[in-house]
Every structure is written in C-alpha cells, then in structure tokens.
Image 1: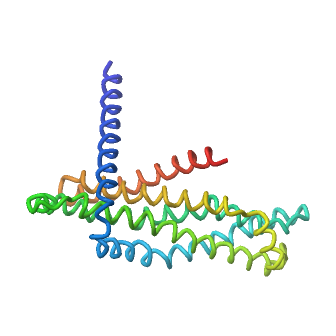
Image 2 (image 1 turned 180 degrees about the horizontal axis):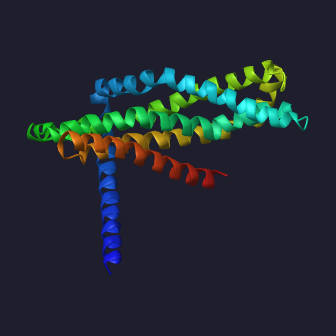
Length: 257
C-alpha cells in the first residue's frame, strides 16, 4: 500500500510538472509577438548560444566524422564496398549524428547556464522585482532564449554536418585501408542525400533547440533553496534536456520514415 502511495505521488508530481511546462510554453509562444521589441536581448542570446558554441561544436563534429569514416570504412573495405563510405557518413551526419550530437553539446553548455542564471535570479528574488516593476519574467527572460535556441541550434547543426562530412572525406582519402578519393566520396554522398533528408535533420535540430531553451528556462523558474538549489537545477536541466532530446529523436525518426 505504501508503495502505491509513493508511486501515485510521483505520478502526480510528473503530471503537475508537465502541466507547468506546457503552461510556460504557451506563455512564451504568446510573447513571440513582442520579439521585434526585444531584438537586443535575442541577439545577445544568439551570440552566447551560436558564436560561443560554434568552435567546440565544429571540433567535436570533425572528430566524430573522422571516427565514423575510420570505423565504417575499414569494415566496408573487407567486402570491397568502401566507396559507399561517402553515403554512410553523409546520411549519418545529416539525419542523426549532426542534430543529436550538437543538441546534446548545446544542452550541456547553454541549457545548464540558462537554468543557473534564471535560477539565481529566482533565488535572490530578482524575478519578484521584475514582477513588481510589471515586467513579465516570461517575456523578459524565457522568450528571447527560446527564440535564440530555435534559430541557433539548426545553424550550429549545419556547420557541424559540413565539418563532419569534410573530416570523414579526408580520412577516407588518406587512410590506406580505405583509399577512397574525395571526389568519389563526395559523389556518393550527394547521390545518397536529398533536400528532404536535409530538411528532416534541420527540423530535428529546431525541435531539440526548443527543448533546450524551454527546459532551461522552466528549471530556472522552479529553482529554490539557495546556492545548493541552483546547482541542483543545473544538473536537472541537463539531465531532463538529454532525456527529452532522445525521446523526441526517436519519435521524430519514427514518424519521418
């Protein structure tokens, strides 16, 4: 009986959390109409998210593409099919590795920072000060961050895909076990990819960006308990973002096939 009570309490907490997240999302979308009046805040967030994350995202994508090329190309060479490496690396980077890898990186770097910043404002009553001045915290804090994530994550994914494909192509050409010229690698990749596949990858990236921005803001607004609470919120933001990105990736992949 005690177990059922605990389970019921946990389920109620989850349902309450989902309801609060949905309410915050609706409020944030409502304030999208105020975006032209908040361009400075949006551009500041885009600089933090996009420009700040670009170097590490490109570096990670480069080595992911290179490792993918080495692992896959070596196995394909055993069957004399190494020329297909371009198609495999291209499709993998566009449909899965590019969006998911970059989004997880942004969630770890930016989502946690959002939760910590807004959480600190919540703990030290700066949110209450905004409400006293009749400034909506959702419009002032959540809306610019969500818009910035919706635009910057797909842009980062584009750069990550390009760099990852180039890295895979270089490895395919210089690795003696694979030995596929870059021109052959590129031609096979182009034949395997279509605008539809690229659109699917960018749609995933936009959804993941929305998850990162929304979760970071929601966890920040729910922060309590001083400095310890801020640290816990940072951790919860990253874990929840990772979980929702993986769930969303499965659902999007399932319905896009």
